[in-house]
Amino acid sequence: MDVLRAEGLSKHFGGLIAVNEVNFHIKQDETAGIIGPNGSGKTTFFNLLSGFFPPTAGRIIFLGNDITLIPPNKRVMQGMVRTFQLVSVFNTMTVWENLVLSTIRFRREQTKPNRFFLSSAKDEGIRKNCLEALKLVGLESRAMTLTSELAYGSKRMLEIGIALSLNPKLLLLDEPLSGLSDSEISEVLNLLHRIKKNLTLVIIEHKLSKIVDLVDRLCVLNEGKFICEGKPDQVLEDSSVRECYWGKEEIDQRAT
Ligand SMILES: Nc1ncnc2c1ncn2[C@@H]1O[C@H](COP(=O)(O)OP(=O)(O)OP(=O)(O)O)[C@@H](O)[C@H]1O
Ligand SMILES: [Mg+2]
Image (cartoon, rainbow, N blue to C red):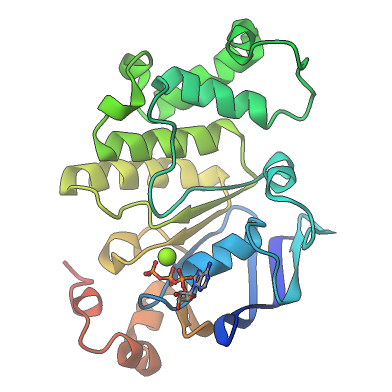
């Protein structure tokens, strides 16, 4: 069964067509990569899927239900979780507080409105869930560290940890490797290789060489349209893909 299907999805910003009648689907436990030049509509596509913008046209089917018009937080509660091109965590909170806050915010059960959120960290279910996520991303020794003190790569790991703590049925990662050092990239890739077996994952990435081994399928977006998709090696040999990347080092360095 398809976990997600986008049908004829478009987004116009005035006269600019950022996403142009896109069709996309992903099966359970599949890992798909989305690549494409700057400004080709990758992030806008994620913004449509996750409900940050209403589409100009088209519809989104998630786990068999039409979610085109439902708000972003409800999509998260149904299991669609995303991370952002620029890491999005609360710098003024500790690592642990970031995790607990997200877990409580997106819980299906209502928390009592008069209950201060951190007191809910005593809830054994929440505590266990957050601790597991923290261990998965290797940040357990940093639990009480103020997030602003973390290196960018650790913030990225925290952001992914938060996403995983929400038990996603579909995880959307927008350029999770951007801005990271080589060793931080290895850590994030290592994590993604470990978790991808039991996860449906869509990853936008510029660093093609880093994801060819990770993804089952690669989709190339150019000027708001998917121009090619298939096994990573075949896609990277495709002449239309090479043309839209012409002169860009990413393609030629893919074997490095
Ligand atoms: N909120 C917005 N308002 C107006 N135009 C926008 C908005 N968001 C994106 N765009 C435009 O839509 C196009 C696609 O942008 P988008 O951010 O989706 O590209 P991208 O493929 O993610 O690029 P990058 O690789 O640089 O992250 C660009 O021309 C961009 O300027
Ligand atoms: Mg982008």
